[in-house]
Image (cartoon, rainbow, N blue to C red):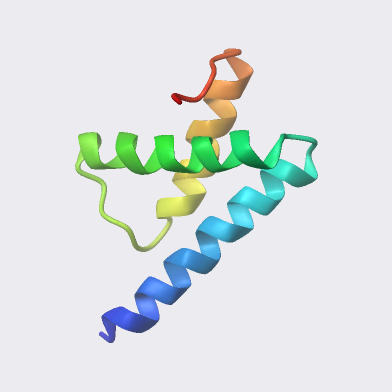
Length: 73
């Protein structure tokens, strides 16, 4: 597997999630903070980037927002 291609794909997936969040009305800075919070959460859980990493991230972010939590600073 070419990891540079996978890295580009992960960056694109992250950008797509950020755009989906801002498209639903979220402030771009807050959306960026949520993406970073997911990356931290995933590391804590031992989830490696790849596959459905960002789809899982979007579900996690949506759950956090539904619980009215705020992203870390």
